[in-house]
Image 1: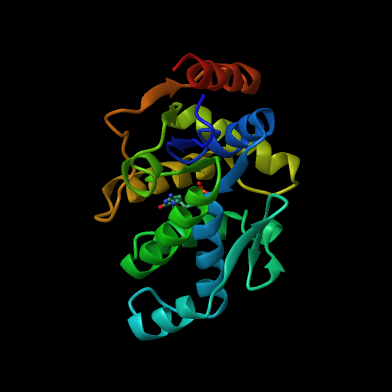
Image 2 (image 1 turned 90 degrees about the horizontal axis):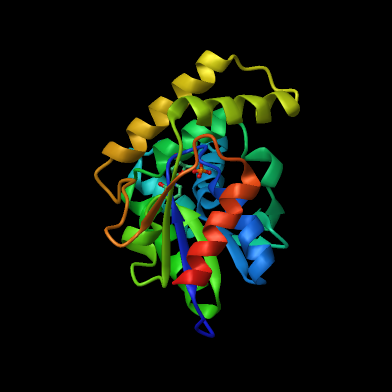
Length: 218
Ligand code: DC
């Protein structure tokens, strides 16, 4: 294996990208960068400050005045750990909405490229293999059926004691798939040189093993 390498993991919402990427990062001893968390942080902040995506002036001001970093696996927005605040269904929708905005993507993609240059990383998102780290040594496209993804998300929310019906979770997933795949800028799609892994019916351990196999076998 090269001394420095990048692993790009892309795929739709709820495919298990972050769980898998975190576990693989731990096994390989490299950094994990959750780019979805960065879009969530921006969505959260814009929502809190009532900055509409159409209001380019205020949005650009807000972005220029925003710092995003990771510390011990936590996302830090302007010095505040916002990890637990950005995992709500409301912020999911805000993240999807603001991630379609050019100014937001430009800022975050630049940050992500810088993070990917410093050391070996595993980065997950929607456009990592196609845009952010086009020359990543390893590219994986993680998918699962919309129903299975909704089922996983539904259980996760239930465990956290959050009330949301399965039907509305499935609806949200389909809506976000649609947004992420049809937006003009860097839509979600599989890079030509990515390996597709359909995880429907697989458990977490099996998926981690499949990813480790890809990394070791290449
Ligand atoms: O992976 P996630 O659900 O935390 O991502 C939140 C939103 O951010 C999702 O709707 C798509 C968007 N996103 C993106 O456009 N590009 C990325 N690289 C990562 C996430």
